[in-house]
Image 1: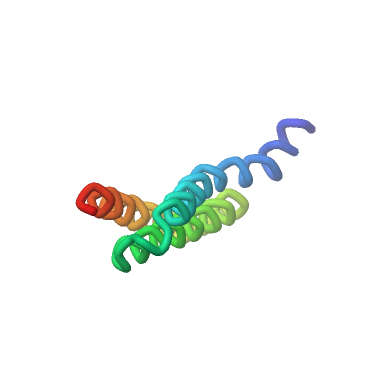
Image 2: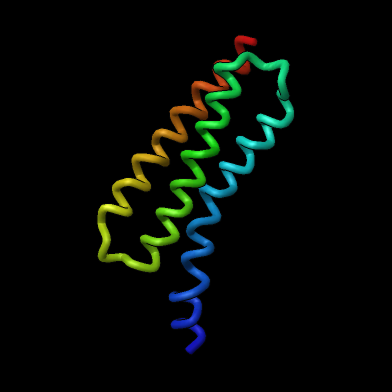
Length: 96
């Protein structure tokens, strides 16, 4: 009973928390750099947060409905887009 409960209810939340944490870190950096940062850097950090939040929602629903392979594919693409945006934002922070 406990394993079934964990598998159906807890596991989707745990899986979604990983990219959700990355989105929170992006928003924290956005708050730290504030309005002094160039517009492109703020855009990259915002895009980064949106991509990771989207990925978290998609992973959450994929864990609930594992037969929907399109959820997995789209979540992988949004995660890669988030990582790319994060890398570009780091380069932007180094340059400015």
